Length: 261
Image (cartoon, rainbow, N blue to C red):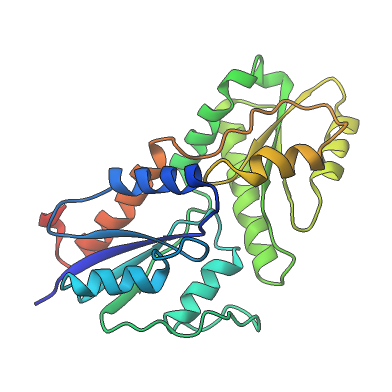
């Protein structure tokens, strides 16, 4: 008998509020008692790592698992590292160090957020209090990024696509993107201000939950420059729970369990 379950995997943090916001989103996406959903973390959160989540689902009789990588970009090396530990081939010559997970259930590995229309609407809502006249404003979307071949290009594709979605949705004059790795945020902001000094630039952080990067790294990288910023991350916006639930529902439908949703 096919018994499906969901394993949501996010990065993890030492900040309790970061974990709390992720757990709240996963709990809000729960799809009924017949399909258990477990939230697990790549690192840091003792007792709730990925292997712990697998063990919990299998203990509850699950033999068919959807693994949802709750990460911003398919350019994250962590997404590939987790996939490798589930037996998937690496995207590049960069090998992960997670080893191989101990799992008996059938595994389906999902996709991270990337350039999603609902997430673009979330980001637009996050910056609404910073915007006065979109036609005379520019957006700078900032994500973590990666220096690694293949992953850098995936970050580029996702960030550029999402920036353009934001521009069109909000009616902004311009939208561009920058990564923190490699360190390009300050140079990109300077270039935007030099090209159109009369336009205000709104900085949009592309991070799942508020924390070190939104509160400290981005402001320090842009120190001394003129921009608008509120540091608002994607959580606790309800769109993340809706995104999770959509991934779960589509998978359940694909395996013939739509009636459980």
